[in-house]
Length: 156
Image (cartoon, rainbow, N blue to C red; front, side, top):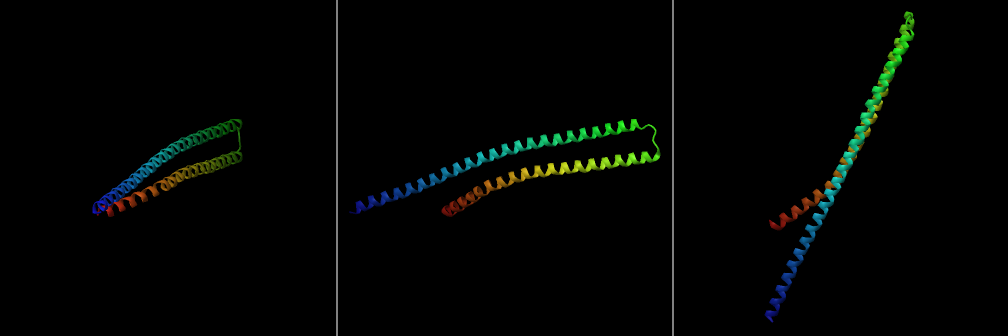
């Protein structure tokens, strides 16, 4: 009878060890799957950030090209106006000078507004990317800390 009890006890111990090993393997496999999912989502996010960067770079280049073209057109317009008016009185000259100064101020304000709008759009894109990275990384860090704590308690 004691032999039967010994056999049952040894079978129970083997089953307990097998359950523990099976649980540990399941945990490791799920952690690997989670890490694989994390890396794939991180790669996807990096690719999206790169695409956003390229898109925004094209917008910035377009902005500067448009700004240069607007400036050249304005200068050309002023040159034509100046050529048409070779003989002007002092009053006419002051009026023209005031108009040119007003044109420069309005162009500067328009350019500043477009620049600020572009910077805001660019910041929003990167802010979203940072938030998604935090959302993805935070649960994984918590799981790793919990696993290390459990392992430390089991070994210590």
